[in-house]
Structures are given as C-alpha cells and as structure tokens.
Image 1 (cartoon, rainbow, N blue to C red):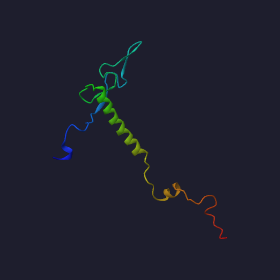
Image 2: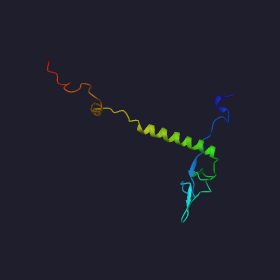
Image 3: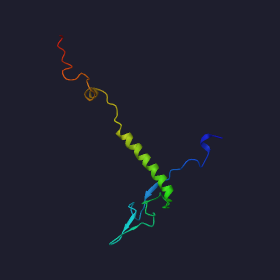
Length: 106
C-alpha cells in the first residue's frame, strides 16, 4: 500500500465563493435594520457551484486554508528578485564609510 493512498486522514480543500444574497457581507440590509443572512448562516461564504452552507468547524478549516494560501502569495511577492548588471552596484553598500574610497597614499 502506498503512503499517499490512504483517504480520510487529510483535509480536502473546498473551493468557496461569496454568498450571492449578501455578497459576502454576512448581513442583509433592510430599510432600518441589518439581519444575519440565512443563506450562508452569517458567514458570507458558500461552496463553489453547489451553494451549500458549511458547518462552522469546517468553515474555519477552509478559511484557514485560504489564509495560508494568501500569506504564501504575499511572501512570494515581497521577496525581491536579485538584481544584476550596473544596478547591483548602486543597491549594495560599498562598506568603506565616509572618505573610504579617497586613498591618499600616506
């Protein structure tokens, strides 16, 4: 039996979409009041395509997956690409300090 063939031990990531009734805000606005959206149980998220509502513990897990994915994308975008060519000389420190490149030969 392969190591990766066992089902049920790993959580499956479910694609989510914002609720079509409350537009992901979790509340429906009336004329003078706001009510909790009954189509998404006040979470603002439903299952992609089928529009089913997730239980609160499953929703927390799925939102954690989305958060980890978003944080990974942010970390990838923050990492600056290495520079090459003449630009790299201007971006690094010359490590000589004030008057360092001025050698008088004394």
